[in-house]
Length: 466
Ligand code: C5P
Image 1 (cartoon, rainbow, N blue to C red):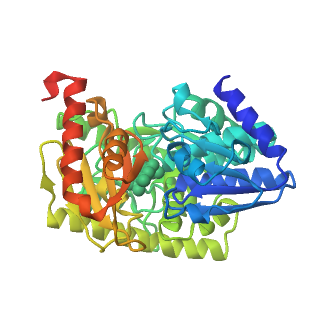
Image 2: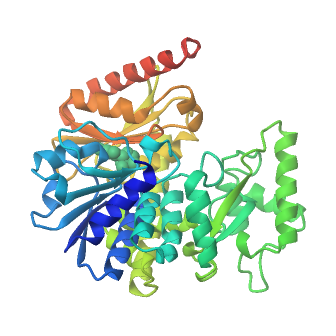
Image 3: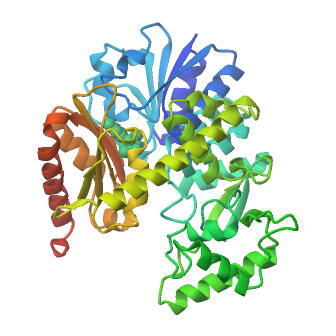
């Protein structure tokens, strides 16, 4: 059986089900999975309801209904099959559609997972889309949603664009359908649909450009020196996507020269980006990156259904709610980032860590950790701990690192799932980003244990790493 056969088998099981419950994750990828599959299922006239959980763990398992519906777990489940088994769920009533590492389990649930087939740059929304397409080949309008999920899960980051079947199948389907537009050599910069250009440039540090990154006034002067018109007659700032092509070229050439003059690499200056021409200009829905942030804001602030409504086309109340959450989300993350930088992290040999207490929700600490990394020592993974308001006996742990450190042999998923299992907790995720829940009493020992595991990973990959 190949990956396509797995998708086809899952599609057949879904199509034959009398009723379905989707259990999905609250991040952009999970929200996109739910919107793709629930629309594909509804189109077949099958009743479907959805449940969102921040993670599949003992605390959230009661949200999985005890009924006769087929339970489709998306963007989670692969690493928690023992929990499903513990709950008494049979093989017949479960399908897992995921891209996380699978844990060995006592029961063999039907699973569609891209990882065992070597597709490491596909998110669960990508897998969900391929299942939806097997259900009905006319579901290609949903490719756009899968692109948002993939980009939201950082699948385009390492290679400055989507790759593999996500690029060759899903993006191509979106282009053919007409709601996806690819810009092959675009500026690799966040906020191209909503931010004044100088802010877009200043907030970008991949690549770090001397005098521009972290320096809005420097960026503004840089554009002025190039003779770029930055505001319209009403003094409204232009955003990147509405700039004339000639101006964009001028800026990219000047940035390239600046990087070369500073002896920096230029390979991350440009990226392939994914735009949505059917959305209103100057809104976060115009490109995959900003769209995904909006969904993340909804999910991380406990309103994943609002994100789902937007993916289904609601541009009224849901959109206004989401805009509000997006502003709030950004403010919190900025604040968390500043808190980490100001408070400082404690450095161990192989990691740096901080406990942020109950100041920030456990759903956003990982995002803040990832952003803080570029302002800290990015050669060492960062571990952030925080309180879990619903259960004071637990601590949430989030870890982030960079592609370069992963290349040196680091696997945060392995480190956190092994270490948390030793203390009776549970964790999972990816090599580059992982999370876990552990008993609060084990915090200090846990950090030391993860530090030792990372040391072993560095050493195993290459003795020269030590
Ligand atoms: O929560 P956080 O943002 O740190 O999670 C990072 C990654 O780890 C996500 O892909 C999440 O799904 C995964 N994770 C997991 N098991 C956990 C916590 C997080 O698989 N207990």
